[in-house]
Length: 335
Image 1 (cartoon, helix red, strand yellow):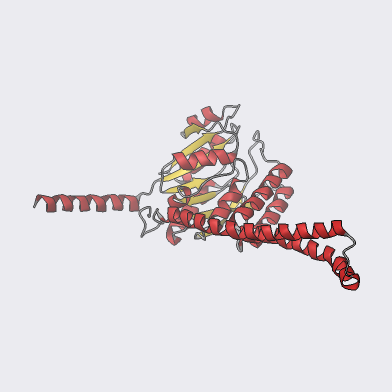
Image 2: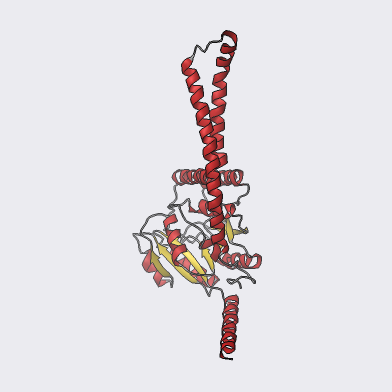
């Protein structure tokens, strides 16, 4: 009898806990910051008003101004990450913060905080793992032409490499499910983190969506830390690296095909001369052709072996992702 009573009590406690989770999911607002004294108070206040039940976390990245003091005065929970770079900050945020739903934005007051409830609602209603706030520029100075061009080029490249993409892969305004955050192995150290996040979602075929959100100019006194060419090159390098890691057969196969093509072109006059005279007068060229064809074969086998390794690694990542319930009415993290 006592066992039945204990079991009944546990079931009731489980139902109560599930109901509490259903009614009030834990929402964390994550704001990586570096020298944002002029904008962080406005940003924190905006998200506190938009998501009253959420906890706003400001992760400072070695700021030399009063960012920490201003953020604390605004009511945010302030933490620090000493390794410089946005990717390092995101890695720390995702590891340290425990929540059901994560809202990530920059601390520069450029993203529209009142749009956060719509992003969260879209995630919960459709049981998505990520909702991207696609930027719609509200001021000419908000989004420089060079950055827009770079975003368009990188977005198109990502589509070609992975089959689908987002309209704004570099947006820093995103809402994540718990299972996305806790299954994402952050490898980037800098501003290329948004590209890595997008590739992670595309590679595991996660349910995702985009919502157009206003994008504003920085408030007076706040300056951008982005470099159009330096960070654009780093993002391009990240895409190529991720493509090499995630699509090794195509990556090394393409290199092998180019080497084989060069070998075939160089071998045409050698074969022609040999058929006419029975001699191979250009021995160095023959050795070069042989080397090119060997390298082409090695590239093909390398791609084949790595493709098998990647498939196994992808299965492990997928299992880690599936270890957590989806947000929404039928998940543990639902609302």
